[in-house]
Figure 1 (cartoon, rainbow, N blue to C red):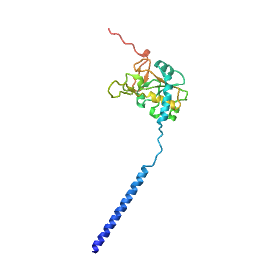
Figure 2: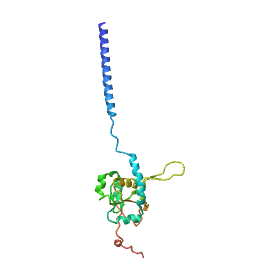
Figure 3: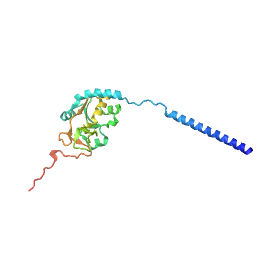
Figure 4: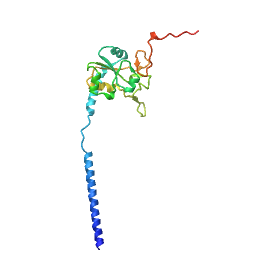
Length: 211
């Protein structure tokens, strides 16, 4: 009988210990859940404000689209810069001669103000979708929806977010190249690591005739 009573007491103590352990575990889990549910401040993303800005820029941009001839003419004038916002790699490989660079992903007020002399500076912009005949360095950004029936290509040109962001940061004197230009067009020059250096015409040796 004594052994039986002793065993019962041991079982009761074991059960009590198990209950205490479960209670402690539940309390710990509850504390962890409470930590996970701690409310964080909202992100600094406001779609409605950006949408309003986009609508404003849409109207403003209509009178800021220029032909290649005007684009190149403006590039020669004072208080004007040509800005390439493509990736650093593609800019280094090939860009319009004279263009300066700031990757779009690096756009901040501080970076823009360190690069652009003043808000009055005329800024000329172009992107991949302005050029043809070079699918690697100037790959067209677009997609054709995979649905039945006639579909219209959706272009996702970098010029548009570039224009919107420059405007939003206070740089409103922006002009965008409106034409689609072949990279073989002799009126425009490129530079970069992938561009073959060509001698001026006056320095090219004349071809020798054949007998």
